[in-house]
Length: 79
Length: 79
Image 1 (cartoon, each protein chain N blue to C red):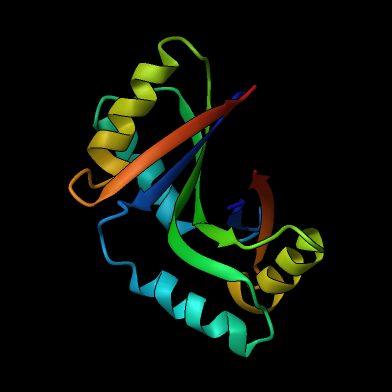
Image 2 (image 1 turned 60 degrees about the horizontal axis):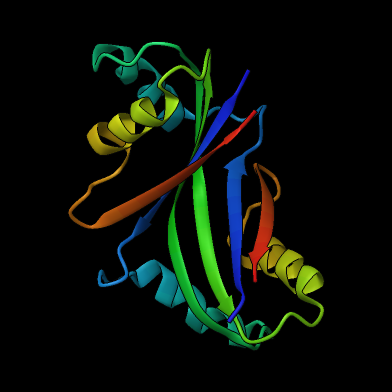
């Protein structure tokens, strides 16, 4: 069964306090060299078939999974 | 600057009420054929260099990003 992976991330111009908190915590935990951290959501959907999949995934993301005002999404299909 | 993508997902045996809610909402919104939905987190880290990157990413995920009792993680590096 094909699995669709969808990442929903805050747009670049949107403040991401959770990412900033991780960014600040990392050096204190001994991890240097991380410049920027952004946090979003990851969805894994098992789908029956791949007919019109691109169109269906975009519609699902637009209507339910992502808030297009503040978030962008990308996806890929694992066959 | 290389970007590390880390997905943190609930383990298969862990209940995922958010995923179940989406699974139930999709048919009502007209999307058929989605069998299973799991929801997790997606992290994007911009890193200075790729020295020991695999080791560092695993350590970061173990100590800060994922709760290994209930979550698993996977990652890939975008050069």
